[in-house]
Figure (cartoon, rainbow, N blue to C red):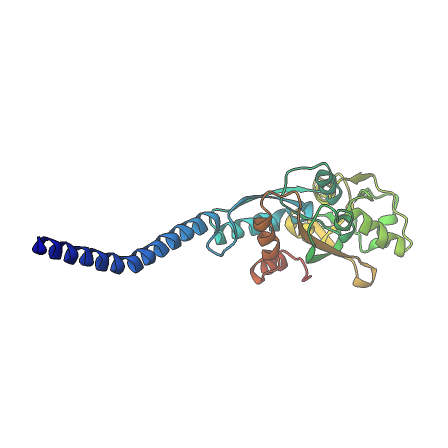
Amino acid sequence: MSFTLSTAIRRAAATAFTAALLVPLTACGGDDSDADDTGAKATESSTATGAPKADLTVLAASSLTDVFETAGAAYEKENPGTKVTFSFAGSQELAAQVQQGAPADALVTADTKTMDGLKGETGTPTVIAKNRLVIATGEGNPARIENLKDLADTKLKVVLAAPEVPVGRYSEQVLEAQKIDVKPVSEEPNVRAVLSKVELGEADAGIVYKTDAATATDKVDAIEIPDAQNAVAEYPAATLKTSKHTEAAAAFVAWLSTPEAQKLLQDAGFQQP
């Protein structure tokens, strides 16, 4: 009986000792498991650069069409698992879409006035680029247009963007400042529509952004407007408060100010903000 009790006591002590040794090991194992789970979740929800993964919709001014398509591809490559879809239109159309509750995550306009009118709908905007105006004419400049004053010639077919469109408002400002009266044959809803009219030969000239004229050098000539007579367009970018991917949207907007994005914008002819 004494042997059995002694044996039981020794076995109980050994079991307790073994259990004591296993406690810290189990605790460490639990930490590793949690860390692995956390890491897996982080991998699933974030990109390689730390930006959250998401399918983003960005409303952007028409004049950003070409450069943003390139920028979007660069951002997706840098952030695997994220997809950026752009919807391009005149800034006034984009503002209307935001006010009507269109599902989107970020907004980039071609002027601060339009963005300022949406303060209740957006986060704090950041200017990501600037632009200037040029006179677009047909290839070879058949009408021999040299400056803004030439646009007042009633024999010319001049097309401008509508006054509510940023480029139309800028055009109006520079023409009024120089006391030049231009009678446009049409007023278009965005800058690309103005450029198209000139490209197709439906207009002798139009006022567009420098960057837009640069996308059609094989079809139009760009007549420079002196800085003293020109206007500077600013492009603010902001997240939308209705976004379902606020962190991912903020990451994209912040990326637009990085050296990589700025190089793409400047290579396309945009000026530094």
